[in-house]
Length: 279
Image (cartoon, rainbow, N blue to C red; front, side, top):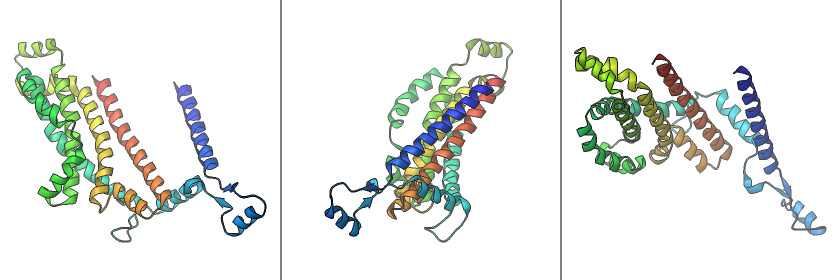
């Protein structure tokens, strides 16, 4: 097992180096071939002899952006100039609060729906209609009713997080083996103890799968939401750097979004493993 992990790490490193090498080659200055002889010399004198392909930043410039922002991630020079740790902190706070509120609603409601075939059929049309709606489509209504961009962002995270958790919780509860429930009924276990001691442990892996999916969606949505509402957050940071045409900073921020998303997914993956092993 350890040898497989080592080989996978080596292959990942080689792929990364290959990507950086191809990126570097693609952004090397190219000599103009449209002019020859005296015309080429004239073009060089006029500053037209070498230009970058599409103006895309080379790896070195992006690396300098990494060094700049990671060297002092907590600086605060005003509303539009904050360190990357502060920007990520604002985004994570919005995601965390919206996700937590979705857990408070989706898990209990999913339990109730999953334990009642009648309620499952009654709620299904509403879930199927509301689930496909883009979370950002709710943003205008949220801004109009809540009158606060930060609260609106949290509401959008709540909306996008609730459906995977609700569906997976209801499915997990409904899929609990009937003989386990029958044994609990035979032993005259009260409904609350049955829910916590029988149904919840059996449905926990499926519930955590819904939470994992919801967190991934929430992290995707918060970037787009912050681009719309502005203020603070990693999405606003990306949009602000794009407006400044600072592409190395944009690429740096995109990388940080990916790294944080990977870490969040790893946390929920580890929780799934713990629940599965415990089961």
